[in-house]
Image (cartoon, rainbow, N blue to C red; front, side):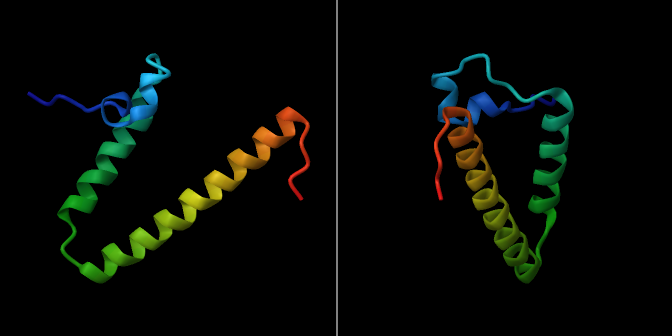
Length: 77
């Protein structure tokens, strides 16, 4: 039987936010993409994907930082 792993089971931030859980559609998309990665045997393709993920991660981090500063009334420039 398939037992999906939730975000909270693999991410330590949930110790602070026990109710944090991805909605079903996002969990499905994440699992689908994870399986596609697992099936990929092309190292160059995996390298390209890893670089794209790093860029996305840092962009998200910057957006979160900027939004948090706006909410707190700070100017980060």
